Every structure is written in structure tokens, then in C-alpha cells.
Image (cartoon, rainbow, N blue to C red; front, side, top):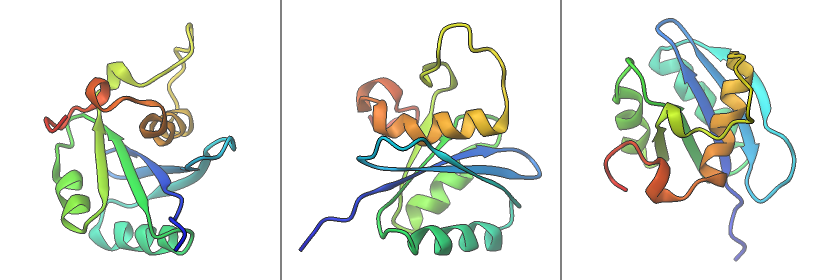
Length: 126
């Protein structure tokens, strides 16, 4: 039985919206920006259903911030792997100071692929 390739989903969580990007695991393809979704439970469930159509293994990552761990608890409660990434440890190019949702989401989608568990885990489990 073949193992499914994980799909890494980067989230940029705001008060009124969540910007979403994804990157296919074990692929050199650049991350794809999907756009923004609402913050309601139904919006997140719709995102999960659509991403699960691509692969059964989803890995979520988002930046630690004032929105807390509610999203983390929800995703892990549903059985998904979710990483809360420390903002200072997200890989970026030197001199890359422009902050946009599209760029941030792509970095978060790539972070689980590039990171070592000991360095970037901000959720206290690693």
C-alpha cells in the first residue's frame, strides 16, 4: 500500500479572515496561494474537505500570535497534524522585509518541510 504524500497548508490567521496557501510534500513545486477564508468553523471545515480531496494527509502550520491556540486545538482534535510556528524562526531571505499575506502563507506552508522539530516547535511539545 502506497503512503500518501502530505499536503502542507500554511495559514495566516487574522481577526476577520484566514489567508491560505499549500505546498505538496516531497515536491520542488512552489507553494500555491489559495486566497482568504472566513474564521467560522464552517469555513475551516470547507477548506479541510477541499484539501482532503487532494490527499488524505494534511499538515497545518500557522504563526503564533494573539489569536491563540484555538485553531490548533480544533485541528489536532480532528486528528490533523498542526504546528504553531514561532514568527522569528520562519525561514526568509536576507533583506526580505516586505510582509504580505501571500508571502507569509507560502513561508508557513514550507516551514514544516524545512524545519527541524526542535527548532521551530512553539506549541511546547517539541
